[in-house]
Image (cartoon, rainbow, N blue to C red; front, side):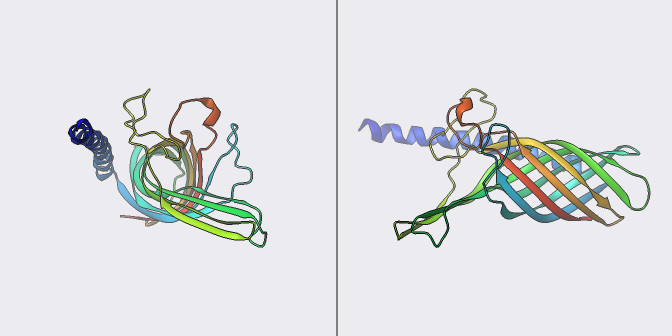
Length: 245
């Protein structure tokens, strides 16, 4: 009886945490969109991601395989001075990686694909050359929140095949609680990611071609804050095409 009475209160508490998280994130996105609407131009972007995950403390990837994904979104272009611009944005972007041990022709092999999707908010400062055709380069931080994704596993063990496909589980972490992570657990990804961007490209009056590298600083696994399990972080190289309007 005690469990039956307490359960609704627990569920209401979880719902309240989720509502607070969503409200804060929506407010932040809305603020950036307001900034974008006040800019000299908006850029609708889309492109391909080549994602991976580091496995060493020094940030290297080593044997992980690149996972192809995509991104789409919008950014603003706010002129600060003649050669310096601020470019906030909001993107839906895919990250992750592929790992494999052995070959499909072997009696025993293992292949896993992690493909999470995030709503990402970059805030880049960009330098531009003068002229009708501009070259640009810049950098800045980003934050992101995980919203969807799948883990796929397949392989063979002594000739017997196995496979599975599951939705990614996310923690219910509230980033304002710095020393506590809600909903943490083994096999669960941290919902919030953050890191640094580097961007370069060329633009004309109507088109923008760019290359971007996202260097994640947040470890992916939820749970403890121990330095023993903080090796896995996002690394994403992307190529995008944008239309200015």
